[in-house]
Image 1 (tube, rainbow, N blue to C red):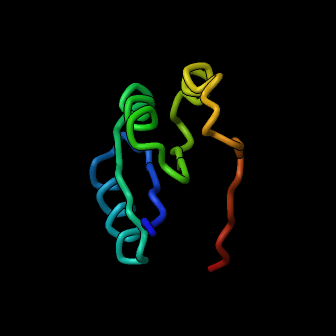
Image 2 (cartoon, rainbow, N blue to C red; image 1 turned 60 degrees about the vertical axis):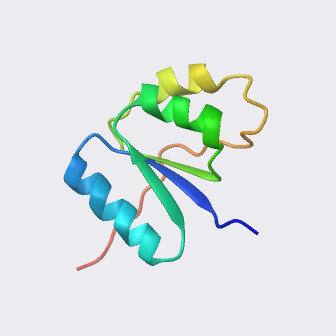
Image 3 (spheres, rainbow, N blue to C red; image 1 turned 90 degrees about the vertical axis):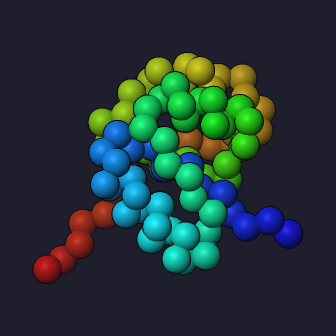
Length: 85
């Protein structure tokens, strides 16, 4: 059985590298791309199990591109967590 594949969209290379590394250390396969165009190309070819977007990504443009992609089940928006000090 293949491991869960996570696609992380982040335009800051240092953040993308850190998050991808952290997820890989947790046992997941993770790929990072820098923009919506690269994300859509990745989704069409690899079909990740989970898509994680940074807050500033053009979500509307990506959702428009994904419209009709039957393998995508659900989109979650505006999910956030507040960590207490």
